[in-house]
Length: 143
Image (tube, rainbow, N blue to C red; front, side, top):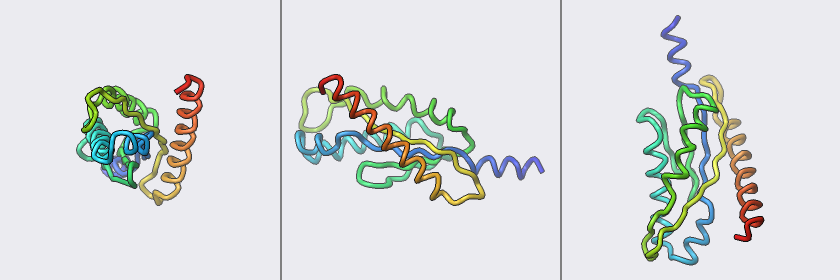
C-alpha cells in the first residue's frame, strides 16, 4: 500500500506555465538573435531550478510548461521564486548592456488520475492575470 501511495504522489504535483514578458520588444529593438537568446536563457534558468525527474516542455514561442512532480503549489512557488534573479542582468547578442528579462508564471496543482487539460487552463488563466499585474505595475512606474 505504501508503494502505491508513493507512486501516486510521484505523478501528482504542480504545473507551471511560464511566459517571457516583452519578447516582441526584445525582437524589435535588439533583433531576433537576441530574442532567441532570451528564450534560451529562460529555458536554462528554469532547468537549473527543477529536478531531473521534472519535465520542462516548450509550449509555444516563449511559453514553457513545467511539470513539478510530488510538490504542492506553495513548494512550486518557492522553487520558481529563484527564477527572477537567475534572469536578471543578462547580456544578449547585439546588446552591450545587460537586459533585465522578466516572465509571468501561473501555477495549478494536478492529480495523477486526472487529465492535465484543466490544470493547464487554470495555470494559463493565472499566468495571464499575472501578466496583467506586471503591465499595471510598469505603467504606474512610467515604464
